[in-house]
Image (cartoon, rainbow, N blue to C red):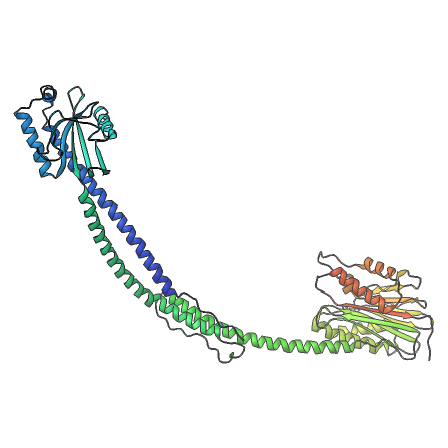
Length: 545
């Protein structure tokens, strides 16, 4: 049963809404902070400019040439009284907390003039000294440093002093030689700034929130209409398509037909989904047909394998005959192969063994192999000499051989009583003679051109003798040319060495041992050629009619 496709836990709409609100909050905070600091700095600059101008105006009213005289005599005159009146007017009309002038001394700040009316808090007269009982020692030290060092700042803003949130400005009056005479200072309350800033920030916040709320509403509406809703249609259609059980509902599955007209990439995406689902259905149908066809071919190949196996003799026992032994095997690289073997009695005294290797693999090679095997057996049973059998087979197989296929072929007829062997070799691998004393020899003789390769090819019959107990071992190049993962060939030397080292002299044991050693040698490397072998022996026990 097909697993149902799981829908996302958080919708795209929720994600976009959350992201938009978060962005709006961040932008609001940023705007508020920027507005706050910009407005505050602007107000500070305005206060600094105002109080600096007032202090400078007050300083111009001080009779600098009479300061020492006033301090020495401690007496005032009309000009001094006019200066005090001007200080009072400046202080009252400009909402200054204090407007004053003094001279810093070791004892404290020595008062010269101020704008506070007599009887009010903070009123002092000419010559009064304000020491540590009125100001902290660090304020007195700062006043002395301001008086003596022209590079000291002239404006201070304090919020933690006993006098409250103040901005203070100073101007040092100097004589013609540049020596300090007097300090004029003013204190202005900045408590109104806090209330003004709070009202300003509140106003900016309300306006920003309103603007962003309106923007988010419009943005989300547009987003839902132009993006989220079309995407949701695509998601729903794709989910339904994916959740269809294609094993059960293949005939009912329909391609998507999403109708989205946004005129942008979303519309292109919808069209791509429509095309993709249509292609998927087409591919599935084609794959179903291909799979059915492949299963049909595989079935036919399995039948062909059984047919081919049936064509090769599998019965290695001959009732009433104990004078010979024979065993053979064929392991195709594909379902069917081009290698073949055959053995049969020509008459009671002669036995024929055949092995061949058709060029190529698969069905074409198997068909050519069947024709080759049938042709050779028919010619041998006509009692023709092996060289004539090979020549006639070559001519027959060359006819209508438009594919240019050929077969390496070895045919031998053994006279059982004498061990005389007549054989013909058409380009096949050398035949091994495993002597009864354990030696491994090669059956030596003239070789001819491959069969079906050239219609005018000539073949030579070879003659030799084998003794009772000797074993003839025939094989195809699938044995010696098998390779391992390092691409090393199995080779003839390894084959000869294996046979020499075998302790049990049995034909079936010989063939089985070679196959096992081939598997050990090749390991995980895939078989690329057919592996065929045949063993024949004249036994020492004789034969029975």
